[in-house]
Length: 266
Ligand code: OAD
Image (cartoon, rainbow, N blue to C red; front, top):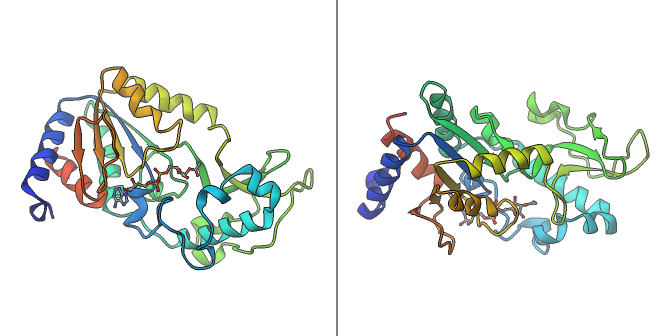
């Protein structure tokens, strides 16, 4: 696969691998781009079908849910249906293999994701979710987790209830919503603290498949750089980011398997 890439890019992958082989603490932040090759559209992709006239930014907000809970719930049920059958791609698998391998070496990997899918987990990774989990619900009023919905997800796709009808909380009668961090909401405290610690103390920070537009997650690379880390970006359309030391401008599913192979892991 690597042979098909421009020689300048191959040289950059080798440079990244050499750097990573000598470093101990690695912090990785993934975004929607890592799941793109699994068939999950990114946030900045135009939506399709019934939802083509809506943007994700207009639906993923507490205001949108207060205004029209049925609309927002229907959109998430549609997204769940879209994501349910998707499988990890070679990028997820390469990261899981690297993380597994790191237990045998003296490297310490912290994998952080902005994604609400579970493809990292399906590939075998231990991952910190900054923006919540598509397969969990909670009450929009009392915040108590709602567990009766979606519990079949890990068994069989057929068991998932994709009904678009709103459901209400058995404790307070509030509407049930997805357990996802919407625009304007705070990130989960423990997850954010762990991510900040990992970014502030890493030797190398790798940003994979993210437009780096949404804060505070986008600030993790700055925090790492400020504390002396090298920054690597993997994105076919690199962001206009002056922090980056090594840019690997191709798909994550192409670059990551080659990167870990060059590090002697695969
Ligand atoms: P975006 O949709 O903003 O950006 C996806 C990035 O992935 C873009 O920079 C693409 O160039 C890149 N990309 C596309 N295909 C790729 C591939 N095969 N390999 C590598 N990169 C690829 O998604 P995020 O940055 O994840 O927040 O968005 C951040 C947050 O904004 C999301 O978590 C979500 C959103 O709206 C909330 O819902 C709170």
